[in-house]
Length: 113
Length: 112
Image (cartoon, rainbow over all chains, first blue to last red; front, side):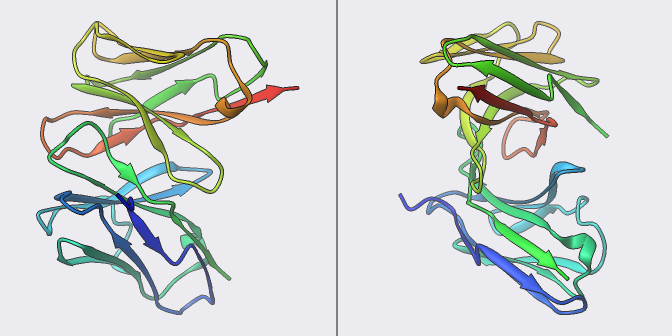
């Protein structure tokens, strides 16, 4: 079991640029979650998918954020255009039919300058 | 929206001491979970609780699901250096592929 794999681990970009974060969930897990972690706001749920379908995107901060899950083994979170206040650690997590909690990836630390 | 308040925010203890932290909510949850986050990594699940009043242990860790379903506590006995990290509680409201609300975290530091 390779766990939830996120890439890149670190991303530094200039304000206004497009940023794409990637996630590969654990094989067999059918729910995928994107979280953002900051010192001020802690862990915030942005969006989650079940069987590749977006179920709840109420946490997506604004239209600059979008997420896709084209198949069961891949998801992306895109920010376009990026702003300095988007700087945070973004986590992807997956689970299989609520088997007892999520498995988190190691996160992507995003810095927008 | 739902909020989970964790206390204390931070703890400084000596190795070997017992630790106690708790989490309270303004809303009822049907599941409570406790996670630990090491620096540079994602949170890792420690204990999951599914029934009000449930008391569950995992090694030196013990957690309870409050009878009112609005709180939970986590105890760590005989702390060791690898216990250092941030501990998060999380609550879930609906069964099946549910989203979790995370607490604000308790940062545990062990003083040499």
